[in-house]
Amino acid sequence: MITVHHLNNSRSQRILWLLEELGVPYEVKRYNRDPKTNLAPPELKAINPLGKSPVIQDGPHTLIESAAIIDYLIRRHGNGALQPDPSTATYDEYVQWLHFAEGSAMLPLMLNLYVGRLGDAGAPLHPRIQGELKNYLSYLDNALSQFDYLMGDELSGADVQMSFIGELAKQQGLLGDYPHLKAWVQRFQQRPAYQAAVQKGGEYSFAK
Image (spheres, rainbow, N blue to C red):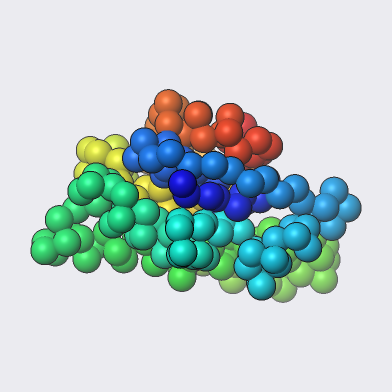
């Protein structure tokens, strides 16, 4: 049985969603953020020395990092679902999206969040952050302009990995100029597997 060490209001929600899409049995061990600091509780360090989520345990295997977990679960438990044929060039594009989420797109969104809390002290950084947000969100919006999902008309692990980018951008009120990105977020949030995962994971403000 796969165990997901899940932190509320975190990127580990997408791992629950993936497992629901795959129909793979799993159990959830919940951890709650400190209400004052919004940080993960120290108990997570017993599983991951970094004190971060997601973490999965599958038999003898313990894995961290969302992209690695998504790749592992689809390869080991997906029976060919939710990814292109690894022998094709389309698969290379799929892997690129897995890494794009945290390697490129997440940084300006996190900077926008944290620098926004600095008030006037953060003002000099806003033009550069806004420029990078426009760059990455336009890129993603254009990629979604022809199909319902990133790899075509069917959901893939790329959408699961990239979902938090869309949700964080939505929470920051950034989707007004990106209709394809906005429609994509609405589309995947309506999927039964997504909604089932939210029910199992508990508090997840990004689904609102």
